[in-house]
Image (spheres, rainbow, N blue to C red):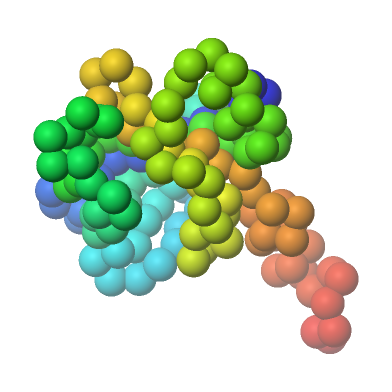
Length: 153
């Protein structure tokens, strides 16, 4: 599987305290911010990796397993791993060839990313993510801010 980037996602119990800890106490620079209100999130640079702090829990699994045989309960985990892959189709095929069962098949999310989920042996959820070619994460935001490539004056 060709992993391009990764990040650790934290769903804190106290969003403001956690943002303060990573932003002020640890003094980590902000890579990007998204959303508003209790569902907002901040991605921090952390050396060679990224830490994303997201306030609102993600929605429950679409097909929760009441016996939790396929992974953790449908409530949001405190920590999730995010692995950006070059090709979702290739990653899923490679994992299937190794006997890895998906916790959720690939789906296009409302925020425009193609995601599939797998769980590690301890139940830690791993989001496999493909960023489509037309997604804003694929564009240099400095160009957009400067009006390059747009009709803005």
